[in-house]
Image 1 (cartoon, one colour):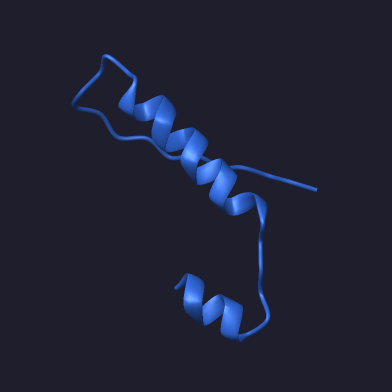
Image 2: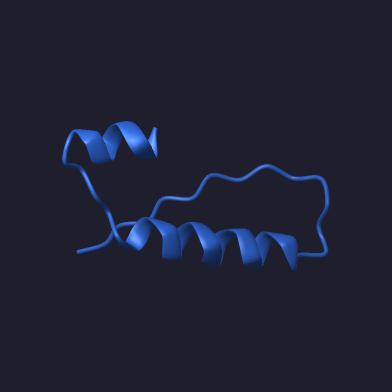
Length: 43
């Protein structure tokens, strides 16, 4: 999807930072069996 977006001229530089931050927080969590939805708004 990211490649397709870049081909269309869509680039969101903050997306990588947000994804890494969320992934890091989830991996550090004590809860091992859960589901979550995150919504991030940037400007």
